[in-house]
Image 1 (spheres, rainbow over the protein chains, first blue to last red):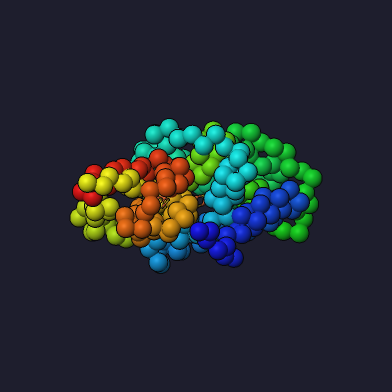
Image 2: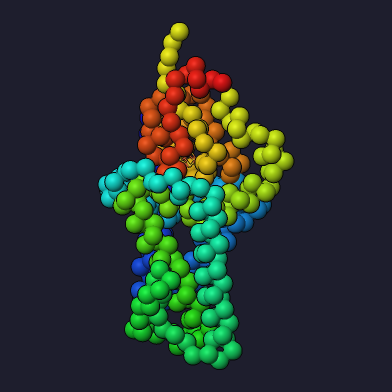
Length: 202
Length: 69
Ligand code: SF4
Ligand code: SF4
Ligand code: SF4
């Protein structure tokens, strides 16, 4: 029995286009904020992970590349990946880097020079000076460079774990996934501590 | 006694990503309130697709008597 495809099953196309657009005009990076705000809003207002379960184009992209197209060893990822320590540790690290990027934007806003580079894996600075950013304020361009770096870095990590482990291994330690689940856990804390979870299958 | 295999959530470390729910051809899995996967034992046919899909490796097929705790 094959499930019928819905419109949201094609959001991986949007994800792929987003990554490509950054090469033509870095300012498109701002669109990525949608993938930050939507899951949080859904988790806060509705109290679920529908974004991950249904709409996330990145998850779908990994599923497609690793699953259907076979670019994955389909081996179980190491256990530490799913541990609370690793997931929340990675989230903290990610948010620190995010904060530093926002700080760089703030500095440019107050007159620091714009750096035309995309930082990969928090270390490697790729020169990105073929783009024309004159149509926007320097701080807007700075944020775009920083944010695109975040998106590209997480995609690279996701692709790496997709190749080595299961297609959607990224989802185990994805900061957005950890945050949205954390929000749901806080929202339903009472039930959670009553042990509903451990009886999930009875 | 019939001992059929059915999917069961084996660990509290489910990340609620929904890969299992997506892979199940019978729609036996849902994600409960963004907290964890919920498997409907009555619908599950034991095909093990969810086990293969789960990136956190927390679903496994177990014998029904064990599954029904
Ligand atoms: S865990 Fe991250 S990548 Fe996976 S579906 Fe959720 S938001 Fe998308
Ligand atoms: S074993 Fe097959 S039928 Fe049962 S829940 Fe998993 S995917 Fe669905
Ligand atoms: S695939 Fe695994 S981690 Fe994801 S919701 Fe299902 S059981 Fe949980």
